[in-house]
Amino acid sequence: MILIDGKKVSAELKSAIRDEVTQRSILGLKQPHLAAILVGNDGGSETYVAAKVKDCHEVGFQSTLIRFSDNVAQSELMDAIDKLNRDPSVDGFIVQLPLPRHINENSIIEAIDPSKDVDGFHPLNIGKMALGLPSYLPATPSGILQLIDYYKIETSGRHCVIIGRSNIVGTPLSILLSRKSSPGNCTVTLCHSQTKGLKEICLQADILIAALGKPAFLTGDMVKQGAVIIDVGTTRVPSLTTKSGFRLSGDVNFEEAAPKCSFITPVPGGVGPMTRIVLLQNTLKAAGEKRR
Amino acid sequence: MILIDGKKVSAELKSAIRDEVTQRSILGLKQPHLAAILVGNDGGSETYVAAKVKDCHEVGFQSTLIRFSDNVAQSELMDAIDKLNRDPSVDGFIVQLPLPRHINENSIIEAIDPSKDVDGFHPLNIGKMALGLPSYLPATPSGILQLIDYYKIETSGRHCVIIGRSNIVGTPLSILLSRKSSPGNCTVTLCHSQTKGLKEICLQADILIAALGKPAFLTGDMVKQGAVIIDVGTTRVPSLTTKSGFRLSGDVNFEEAAPKCSFITPVPGGVGPMTRIVLLQNTLKAAGEKRR
Image 1 (cartoon, rainbow over the protein chains, first blue to last red):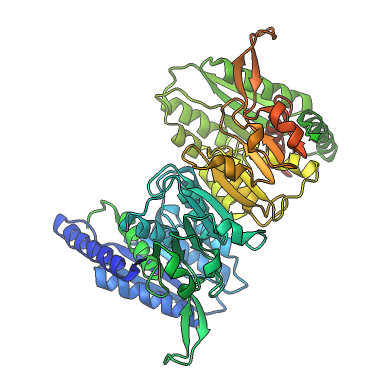
Image 2: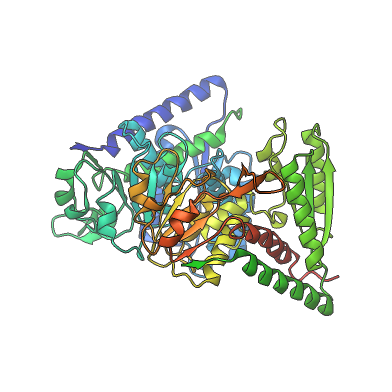
């Protein structure tokens, strides 16, 4: 069994981005600039955005954080997006989700200029992805593809079972892995809450991706000998042994599943670290050949 | 075994559209207007476009056919699209595919105003579909969903196997049938040329959709007793018994498969007639509440 080391892979990719920023500076190209809009004071969102700002700093990107209070009006957010869309110094930007309930999240995402949508959430980018056209890929699916690629895991002709049909993980991943590309060319089965006979379906999987958000849901008896397991779950569960009082749990019962696998991602340290890298990669791509 | 009668269903839906056009006229709403761009003299394309124009006439839509010769320049097509985008009298329009090789088909499709893209091929519409947002659905997938709906075929929790991952049938259908909607909520397996063990996968299917374009590919031994079969294939094969010298063949070996099925679509007369209806439905939707 090989443990897929997302921390190591992401560190290498991050270092490659840093080198490219240095190279850009020598060539007279502009410093990539990522902006983030953060609404309210949700603990999770604060942490994620702080990490993104830190990542930018570490690879030599410029970053801008724009904060709004919880009671921001839809129109204020729209104005801020419009400004970022028109600001030539900003290469890409994100609006940290979730947004407060009174905000129409879809309109916000659709207001982002797709060429600056480095989260890859805009329907135009999702559609281009589905059609196999160049686009910004969403972070988690892209991070998983890069892990598969890094470990040279064969995907062509293999049966991939994905559990969970979310718009940001399961569904885009099912599209990407079905495509005529590498990694890709999988026979993909997309499972979800309404699926019957899940265990029997999982037992057919050469590649098994758990992305449903239920701690330790995937048990050992659902895993075929030699399968590759990608665990996308990151649920906070109470813990007596950590300082914070919680730990991250994946969707896979690691102790049961790991002995049967050829490859498996741990949680934490598997898929998670990759998602932060994709945002940097997309921003670098957005900066393109623009000069200083 | 119930034969799914696409001719009957499409005739009913067409009649409902005609009634709605009459109703619109009474209410002072504008007559829906579909425009089509046809390039060159390909026999298939000529036939398809002629049928669409005829359909418009029959339901009381206005139609406009814009023709270009085979050697049209990309810029001429772009100009024509731009004009149609800006013409308030045109509610929706299509560019008949395929286009000659020297034309960049993707740029042409992306130039269409998504709100007039009644073929549902624009990446923005594909992306919205994937995200479950309102959009124009592509004709074949939408036609199939409507057949399933008409015959009250249960989809929720059932295993649907789709053979063929094209951008206009297999891939969008896999997305639509996976969604939390009705019809939908299927566990979907998307198969294609690289799939291994296809027969075993097909034998698990409660709903089996053949959309690969290989005459009589799906044989009786690939069908589970009681399955629903949707045959999307329409390949012209030589025939000694027809005046034209050819007949349409589906992707399913009908004689072998039919006795095992609960429902099956014939070719011709199954999915085919539905696709023409969807174009009319999308155009009607595009006309919306616009007044005369």
